[in-house]
Image 1 (spheres, rainbow, N blue to C red):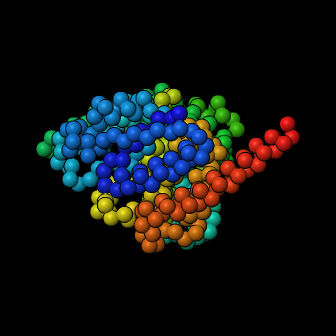
Image 2: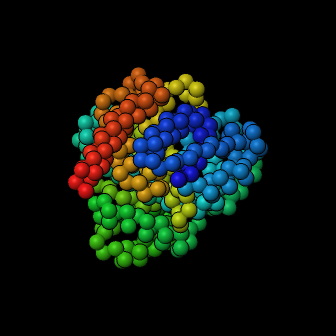
Image 3: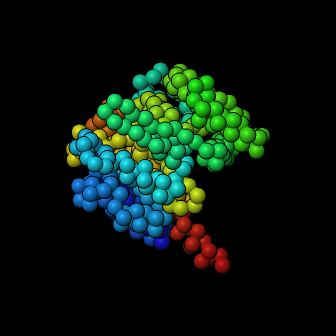
Amino acid sequence: MKRIVLLPGDGIGPEVTREAASCLAMISDSYGLGFTFESHDFGGVAIDRHGTPLPDATLAACKAADAVLLGAVGGPRWDQAAERPEKGLLALRAELGLFANLRPTRVLSGLEHLSPLRKQYVTGADVLVVRELTGGSYFGEKKLDADHGSDLCTYSRTEVERIAHVAFRTARARKGRVTSVDKANVLSSSKLWRRVVEEVATDYPDVALDHLYVDAAAMALIMAPRRFDVILTENMFGDILSDELSALVGSIGLLPSASTGAGGPGLFEPIHGSAPDLAGLDAANPAGAIASAVMLLQAGLGLREAATMLGDALEATLKSGCWTADLGGSATCSEFGEKVREELAYRLTGRDAHLELIAMNRGCCG
């Protein structure tokens, strides 16, 4: 039995989370996994109901979970709140020790035309951003008054080492290339970053390493995305570059992420925001949330076969032309989710029939 905590959050978060959770429930029923789901307030909705974006009960549930699935947080209605919803997300990452954020982007064969970029640029692009998640300017000391504002960007050797090991180990299972992105010509934190990454690289002689300044990387991601395999970078750079990568596939609504740490429950979420203008309209794209559920199954729970089943169902749905409005289609959020589950049911039925045949053969052949 696995305990999955749902944090629907704000805006379109509840809608996309519902579709992803329904897919996970199908997987659980078919494989007899006994998933249990419990939903907790988080983000802006938690501010409204509890006065804080991360209530104690929500944090306790997340710590006790096997995996956490998040929808989205934030929105303009909390811009003037004493605490913003995003503060709860930063606190949750810190409390769970989630220092590694994995953000994959893969252009599916046959769907290159969904990208606003030329086909010859995006065909075959498959990039994984490994983003350090609990350091840098997002977590550094902050000062603000009427005339000045500052955000301290700081990294320790230990922080850089541990995220670098994640990137190199991951690259070994891919194409064996790591591009470390920094701003070492200007920033002291980046000078340390580059030096430590080069030291860690000596433990991985089978993985190629190169470096790019973040501005050059931003241009290369658009002009030559196939040059990249794994991008290793710090917190803010990773946030920006992974959003830029959504141009390759045509919509930020397609992209998932997984946040992992030192053995506790992982946090899985689409990289898009809460899109409050779409909330309640059944118009959001749940593909990123469903793809995050795929990562939850594989990276969070180690269920590779089940993850492949759901991932294949999602890919088949996209290739069938069932698209939400952000991709130029007319499907609603719930219609897209239902189509994925139809594709999933087809695959699970085939699996169940195969297992039944094996059982029958064992029965008759001893």
